[in-house]
Length: 491
Image (cartoon, rainbow, N blue to C red):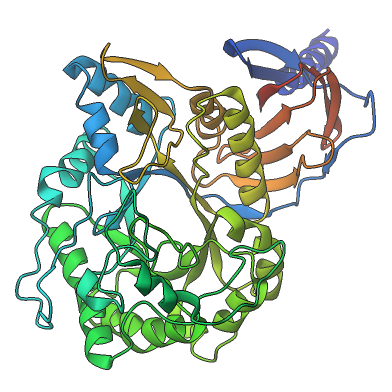
């Protein structure tokens, strides 16, 4: 009798364990019906050929952090709302128990295209001693915004990059790179400095023509001052209780913009980072990592020229990509496997705030994490009305504020982000992915810190799609609705 009882208990235990392991929580979103939750289960056989097969020893990258950017226009949008609504939004974005659970923030050193207008921390021409350096402007905008976020997550980490140096440090003595009669007052004659008489263009590459001059003055006195400028900025923020742990020397060096920007050549990038910025950080802020970024060009040979320079392995700890730069990420990671790789700015679109933006962002996350990026930074989390910048560009945001009605809309893109950030925790391992360029079925599998699999997949076609993923000896077999976002958490 005892033997039969023991056998029965063993069978019950095995059955219970098997059933428990088969349970799957399914979260799905389609346009107009977001965050619908149901259950399914793993099966013993595949219905169709698996798009991914996980055997248990795969590992692309250990993921570290989700983050967003802090900009003045985002702060203004937030402050259009009643206090309670502000608190709900900040909790949704930054609380460890909230929706998106951001643990990292990016912000600009000096003004960017989503500042109220252009400014820097020292516009006194020739102030090589940085006597007049200050962050007074930031104390009224960015710092209150960041501190409001820190209230919900005191352990937020931060990284910075400039859009433009102080204007007096540039060869055109102006915050932008090119003139624009509608949006700046730069003398059009100075546009000549960008390309001079070079006519060569590159079909299919961005930019179509490459700058021939560094817009930052390449005089040692200017280069040394600018490196010290970075260090003073880090120190000033540290005094405000905002620790910066990563720096990139320039936002989008290959965007020749009518808003704040700065064009650089490979020679100038190598010179400034290896000879000035890296040594200054090592001496004054050894706790801060220097990454090469933000790379927004698909000119592989240009980035390769920088990374292959003899001094670069000791200069950069990692490399950051956004926009067209993401196209050359796989090739560069294959050639330079010893660097860390991060995504630096999710693409902002053109102010449509529509379902297409959600699908695009879902695909971007799949691409960057699947190709080894251990951090992912979103651009504006919140904007008002059409999301227009001070220089006329309408952009998307995760949360949209109606400035007249004082109400908010959580956009489709917000839920695309939530599909990942709510379930993909720091220290999860990205184990496999399939891009969705051809069949419109992006798929990614991660293993969370508790050892459970999570599957992310979208169906961006116009018809139902069957998908099978092999997870060890079991199979996730699902039918995905058209234009849907899906997350499967294996229990």
